[in-house]
Image (cartoon, rainbow, N blue to C red; front, side, top):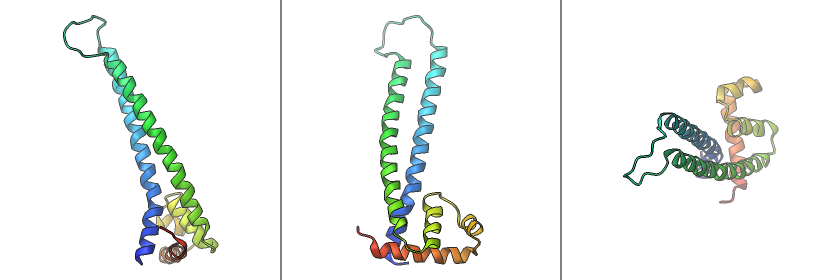
Length: 142
């Protein structure tokens, strides 16, 4: 695999990483919401003088809003990256190569599943994949 092919592969693979980061952010939002609900249940309504601690429930709600804003930004970036990856894959002229690339980099399928779905041997799928990467790398502009 040439350096250019490796760069293309890494770029196409970045879509999966971006999706994982979105899932992590969603989990963090859910954890923070649950924490806020748990804290809200155990807080007593009595006011305590002393420390400058503000309402924990309010802090939690603000944190959730901040996380949601970050998530929206990540989702926008993901959509843009997805659009770019699809455009690159659609540049491949061979239908089978294009299907393999789509299944691998857009639907995140494993090699074995792609091979079974398309009716090829796993080794054939990796060769088809390599040819598709070669075609993209010839058209790739940094």
